[in-house]
Image 1 (tube, rainbow, N blue to C red):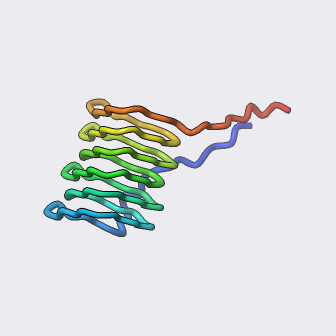
Image 2: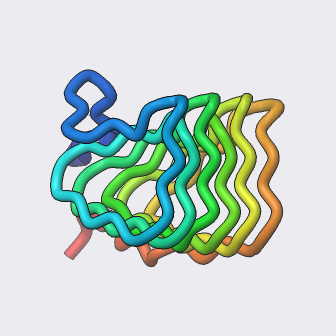
Image 3: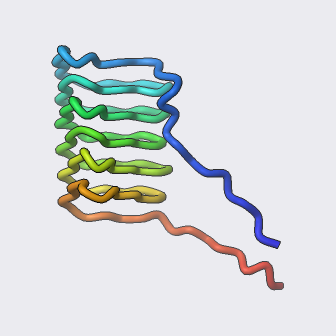
Length: 125
């Protein structure tokens, strides 16, 4: 039989670090847990966990994360090992590399996309 792959989702319920709506940050961010950006970030984001860009979030940075949800704006190249979702209010300008991609109706994406190879077993020997 087919094995069910556990669904990867961005953990928005538990946020470890928040860049607030009225905050402007310039520099490099290294994070291990879930990072939420509602303000402005310029530089580089390297997160071993999940990243959420809120509707008011504006990111001009190279971004690496496990999973990414974009409801705001990102300009820069993105590397996500798991799932990348661009919500209907989201805009992403840059090249992306991801395991899986969801682009909601109304979202904007300008760039190229490279998807990781997924191996599917047919169950036959």
